[in-house]
Length: 613
Image 1: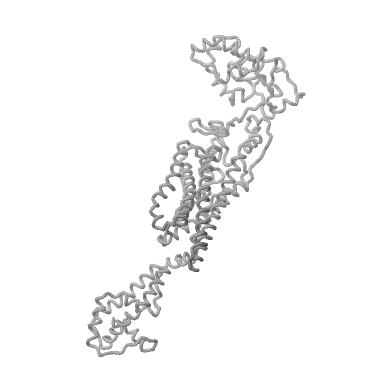
Image 2 (image 1 turned 90 degrees about the vertical axis):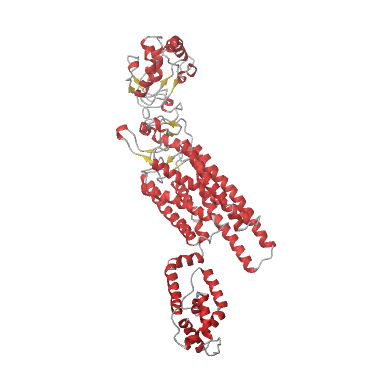
């Protein structure tokens, strides 16, 4: 029985002279690489054959040399066909050399097990294997008739101690910067990511700085929004740095001396890439967890009716979960050496080429967080709506509750839509990644001189818009925090914060002048009489000053100095000693009728109050 396994034609594999010392002077003198044992070139095959040299030299079997050459340097015909050695040839060589191999401590390799070869009893090479012709008549030999799997091209091989893997092959890495996009497309995507990262960084940084201006303004249950914004400050910052550095961090440099092209970096040997991964993955997961905690705090406020103080007592637990879980996942990925460079964005992440890592460390946590968060959110909204419908509230409180529910709903939608879009992109990439890789192998196998895919049924390339949407939504998901802090009060705080110091100093100076005037000696009876008016004005304006103080505390700024009540407000700052001094002056002054109206004399007396004081 003759079993002929068709390989591929000369456009994919070319015959090359046999350079293996053991396989010289055979009935044939050409072979092809890669061989049947997955050795890429003859040098690699020669190293693998070295353990068998003592057995061949001692001629333990007349069939051993031919059997080894049939595997390590198979005959190459014009059509690229190769014949497998018969099982009987393998069995004779193994049986006759078994004892001698034990003496030299050499085991029979598993990939040379005789059961793998066709059951026949013919010499090698067969006569038909040596036939040559310039015009093939069997068109079936022009197609791949055997699946050799993926072979790592020489240009993509890396040092074995790095632990790289690419499409299931060890010591191999993906080409950099991208397998799927040309340079023009890469440039457009990178600038797109750069612009979006700047927008996200500005929005989230604005949210955080707004919190710093007035840290008491954002209490629980809305405090997690601030930490959520901080997470995406770091995420957008990493993407912006990736835009600036391009592929200098995510890719290994070209090495022409070793015939190596630029490849995607993997593992933790690249320290900057490792740092990028740690920050990006940790804060991406932490931002997702903080959103879940936000829904938990809303749930506690809406259903069990917890107050802000009660929720705040659980803050330590919230922080432990929000930072602890992402930290544990990050350490686990570092231990598993799952870091991968992203030549497109210039950052480092996981799941870009390793589908299992994408499935368990990106998709699973995000989907779990979405499921928990949406469930708690819906329960909270239903509870708040029940409160609005069943409990009678004042019109103002009803309006505030409705506005709060609307803000909560809009914020959640603005968060969930980008996040669900990112998850959808990941799922699409998870589903079609193998097809994209097969397409890339088929398009580049001739260029890299590796076996082409066997029976390709479907080819596809990823659309650039898919990656644009993925990167856009990864960053846009942090922008909804601006929606929550965006209000007239925020604008007022930002407008007054820059003038707060100068205004405060001006008020202090205004208060110091009456105090200095008080310690001077009294000058006239008029000043004594004015002291009485000052005392009466102090008590008469107490109510007005209280309302002024309430207005000032509400708006978060000092009242205007030219306000009609500013003089009385200044008197509020005078200590009790100065007021008692004014009372002692009353006994020396003639009785004076004091009225409180809007006449010019009253205004003149009010002006003199500050002087007498």
